[in-house]
Image (cartoon, rainbow, N blue to C red):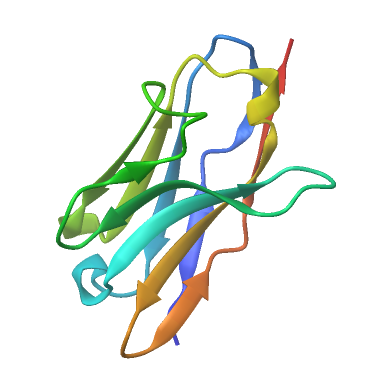
Length: 116
């Protein structure tokens, strides 16, 4: 069983920054891709940023130029640096790990609230 533990959420004013972390219980290179998703109240969960083990990262249009996904393989951790935050970025943010061998795994989520 794979465990993903997110941290770093919180309350921030518009224009501020936060960095989310997702620590995996096994090597992040054992997955085909790691990603960040978010779900706002009353809305469907949506992709924010996707980092394949091999290949280019992808971002939702709404966060391009403001958010950056990165990884530290030594710490088995994936990050989401969020800058220039807007109230519409308010959501629960989830880390996801995808493996063709073992399936898909989700973290418990971390709340991000951006005040105007």
